[in-house]
Length: 178
Image 1: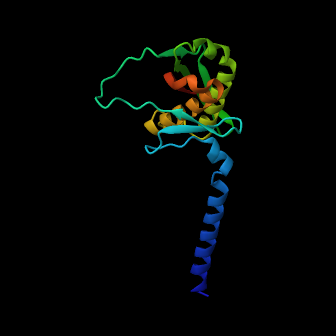
Image 2: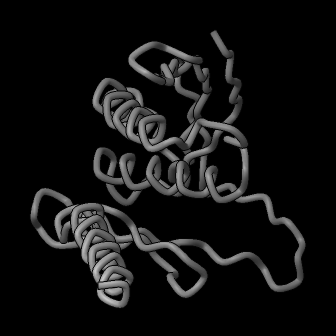
Image 3: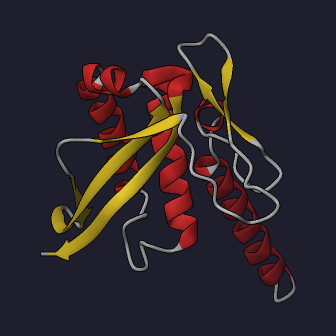
């Protein structure tokens, strides 16, 4: 009996670990909705109304390291800030306030403002998802957290505005603990 008990405990632990991993593993639908990340990916794919993934080009930086001013893009600052509640234990623990701008092709300003309600709705969904997954906890400005947030915002803006979107810029971000 003394030899069976450790084996039994190990098997129960192994089984519960496998079960927890299976329950917490992302489903295929969630994985398809998330853009790929990592240095090996040069583009981000978004499921655009089941029409298949549409690539978002990511412009490479110049090898010389010199910053080039582009006259082919313009920056559209969204009128109002985004306020995101961070909920812990069923109550609002803090508020995150952000200002965002969208980098679009030259002449895309009117399209951004005409689609702003839908764009804001998509951005808020990404921000709420980010808050609910713990993205605004602790060191919320770490490069990994900010990269994940920017990627989600870019994918959302691409779904609303299409290929005129080049980037989403986080102009201001602040967290106020309640």
